[in-house]
Image 1 (cartoon, rainbow, N blue to C red):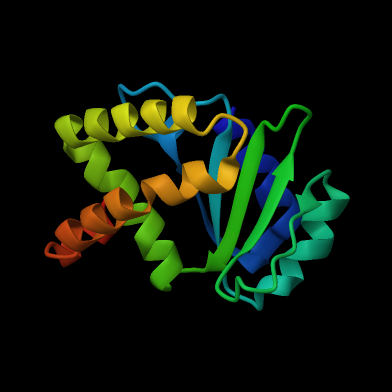
Image 2 (image 1 turned 90 degrees about the vertical axis):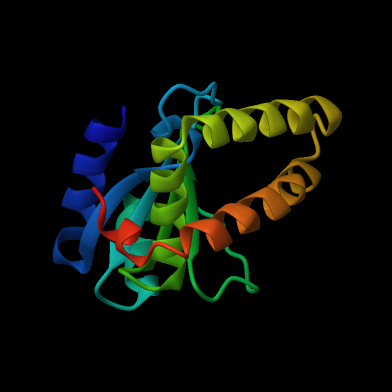
Length: 156
């Protein structure tokens, strides 16, 4: 599903997009994930130049005035895709890429993440904010550990 959607996003954004990556749990090998594909788009241009092309391609823009470093879009009923648009190779870009790569390199940590997400899903069914907040400390811990290896962000 990612490959087909990546092509559609690339066509919609053209040269504005520097890179398009598969992120989120469906990009981590060997763990159970919700059937929602998370996609990270790294932009050359101002982030807001992605709004019109993506909404014209069927995405819904989820405006959040508190998020200055990324734009979020979704598509599908039920939701099938989440697209996160950020500056290519900026802090938000690197955070997502390093997290994905770290979990793919450390299957034990990936399984720990899977167990945490399953527990949070049971405890906070229907409360997306609580579910997301419950993952925060784990994610920060992984980001701190992975930051010790600056070359990791170069893995593909």
